[in-house]
Length: 108
Image (tube, rainbow, N blue to C red; front, side):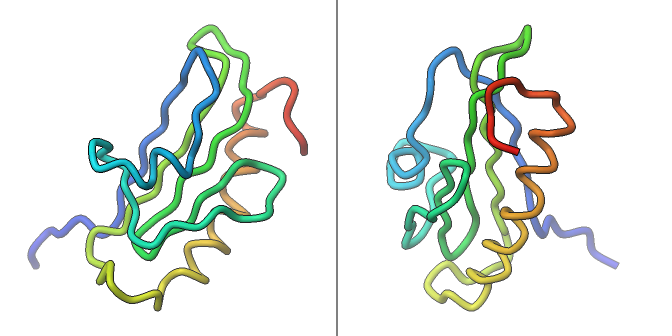
């Protein structure tokens, strides 16, 4: 059986708030997404055909803002066949992660 990366997740803390849509559309970002759109959500979240980026205030000793990037390596980025699944995952996983981290000043 060949090992193949199916998805990757990046957890990052920042001193300042980041714009998830700007990150998703930047040609210089390793987190760029195909056909990104911002979701109406309690958290700033951008979904693309091949992943998502969510960010929220999270005051810890590491930083003041937490960002989670999800990338699906084996998804065809030109089709939106996984977009609904990505959105469903982020709507469940990101709030649970923020809660687990004990972030202060965020919606629950």
